[in-house]
Length: 240
Image (cartoon, rainbow, N blue to C red; front, side, top):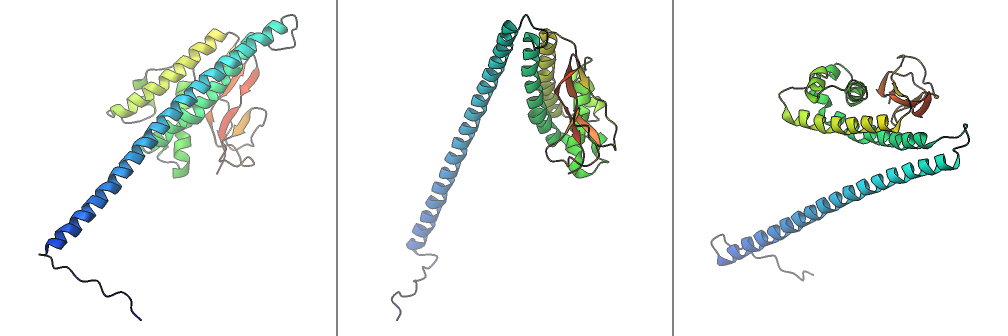
């Protein structure tokens, strides 16, 4: 038994056709407005989350510095325990690791395909290769200008976006270097690496997506050494 009759077709020149088209337009506009409102809400949430993350990171840095000072005050008479300077360097080591894992990685992922020095490498390695080249230029006592770094990396010199992004990244590294020097104690960057040999657990750590048992191919970020003690191991690339 058929309870519903077939829908009646509306002629194109009928007034009802205009009504149907207007209804569809209104419905699409409503869906578009809802989507735009959702996008705006997500953008605001992302900005708020980024701001909160920054605040928590700064608070953690302050707490670590305070902890280092407290440890020094309680162990001032002992030579076998870390002092305030070591507490400072522990906090700075965490900042260094975050800088590598976030800002260097993001830059390398974004611009690896624009870097002539890595284009002869397998596609899966290019971003990590650029990270390694960036590390060589940014974590050094002889920090060059952004324009000179662009030139050394063989990135397009006419692209202002790349130079601006690198200037921002260089600023973070320069600020970190200044605080490292203010903290005192002798520090150095461990860049020594022999490609093709097994990973050295005392000095090196494979990038999370790499195989720990595979031979080391290159350094992605140097180790951070203070008074002969490793505060951050080298990040090395083995194979995926």
